[in-house]
Image (cartoon, rainbow over all chains, first blue to last red):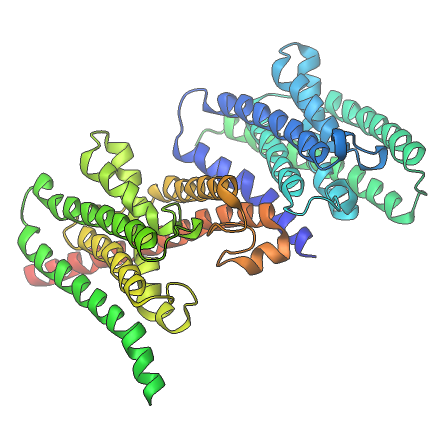
Length: 218
Length: 251
């Protein structure tokens, strides 16, 4: 329960702190610099999480059921493609990343095995996971503020991404760890899909208000 | 009766001496330096930080000479040592932004910690109680912090701006992370911010050491926001009241 509370607290307040900083120190190209900086931070934290978990095992060999691979790893890869690719494909990746930005948090709420490890006594890997959730959300919000994305292409891209993630999850989770598919797992998947719809709705609303503001500057 | 007297001598007298010094310092320095130039106003702060550094050395010498050991809990990387590093920045830095952050950083934590020492810690403190000299030293050190912060407020060395809460909160968090990493590097179980000997042990037990630290950093930003918002509100109310009084006097 306390884990869930701290996860929610960190993943809400991290973006809030970033956005407040952006508002207070409003300079030219600050949003883009922040996006790039946070992406590098995200990659560094993800790599560090893998190394931290590896350091708990003898010879740094992680047993397959304890590999800290989850949707957040996939998010990290998509984020790199989205931020550092300036083509049309990069734009689609941006949209997909934004729409799937809530999934790492939701997945962690339903299944605590994505961040817990019995050997992690100081909770370093857990803290890194929570911080990464906050970073994903802040990058997504900043991308939504800064870039003009084409909504429909993004929706299809994110659905394709989810299907890929589910297949990936099936391969990794059930072939390696031999865990059974539970009802909770199914519910988590449905909530994740709903979250994509919710973020998509928010994004459309934001576009609507932006257009309204542009048409009616007063 | 005897026990109460002992307690009073052990906790009360150091507290009384520290509090008297704090009041006397703030009173005399405010009276003397209130209408002086900015550079003159900084002189008491220079005196304070030199005294804090001397106190730190006294502590080290006391530990090494009398107790024949200098445990990591007493290293100057605890939260209260922050002031020893910020006052030199305030007094000698020529960059205004850095000075502003250092001022914001030193005022609120100092008032909070000093007030805690004045009202709470003498009764419940489990630390600094192993010798009368260290108890006196500890009280004196913390009341110096309070005195510096109050002096800065009274002589208007720092005008509160709401915007400063962000950098103040983040720098408190940053200092906290630095202290934690250093403590872990020195010896986690012995240091003040280590996983098993911190004042916020309950948080570490509940969430885990690293998660607890992240939550503390976020809390530092939130506390800073609340403190600056409250001060800002009070300032605005005070200004409005002054304006009303001026209008009344004119009418």
